[in-house]
Length: 318
Image (cartoon, rainbow, N blue to C red; front, side):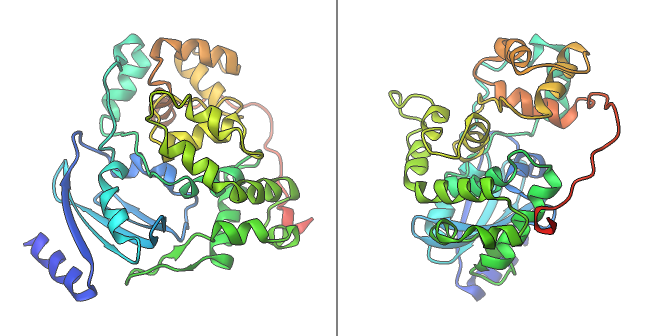
């Protein structure tokens, strides 16, 4: 009955419909969380039983609406010129390519506990670098609140209405971001260095996308190494992009202000740590280090904080 009602609604809007299964159960909220750039992200709506997101595919804009029919069965509908591409890649978006081979959570009790608590956390693959490119650069060296505010403003100011009946907005076109003067970014709370990195990365989007497309080629080298060839994309940004756009379960965000402390604290109990200590501790999980990071960040207690919080002044108020 539920599927019949959904099919009726899809026919009303002329949508394409696809039913599919994924090999492992998935927790939609936690697995797709990296695709949500802010609490008010205008490009996505995420619930435990449904995800609606919009984006730009190689065939044009599309809005994808996926609903849960069972633990591992879903029904998807898509609207817009890129709807066929969106439907073809919907299973990957829900972790169809995620592979737990070689992952042994029992090697550390905290990882085993996290894996037990988050058995539905999957490493998803969006397939498109621009899904996470700009939000990742916006998050460089600022608080998560600042980055979220800037992303919401960028989409509201320069995005377009998404195809379909659900009121979402498409992200700004990369070519438009590449041509925007710095003053436009400043008004939205983005300082010059991040604005220049966004412009540079958007001008080389084809190079970045090629790194994602070739991520499973045996002779392609590491995704992170290829992504960092573009100015404005360092190891930290490349790791986060590769993890979500390419579904890479092993990338580690070296250079993150908080991650190293969180992981070292979870695995040793020490309140602080370094990137080198984090990498050494994660070495036993080689091949799944990024998965372990996501599991621990989701469940392990946060390390203790010391000292007062710093007052942050938004860039557009300077």
